[in-house]
Image 1 (cartoon, rainbow, N blue to C red):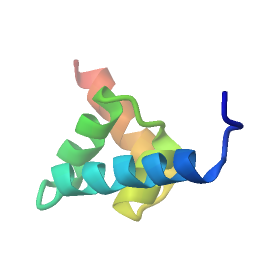
Image 2 (tube, one colour):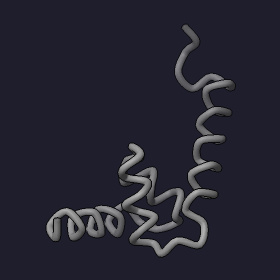
Image 3 (spheres, helix red, strand yellow):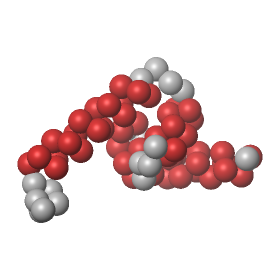
Image 4 (cartoon, rainbow, N blue to C red):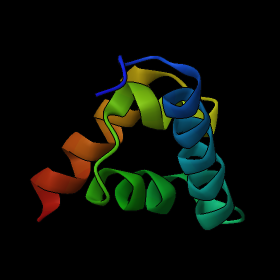
Length: 68
């Protein structure tokens, strides 16, 4: 098994992030956060993809879950 963080693993992670960016392009931030959360991204990862803060992501997720 290849060590975590090797070049192929980093390339796959990059492709996943690029695909995520494409899938949420032109969506409102709230909707993008919900989508990325549903597919398994952590708040820190979502923040990086959407170029916002982890706190903004966590707050949005908290408010959405509270409404549900």
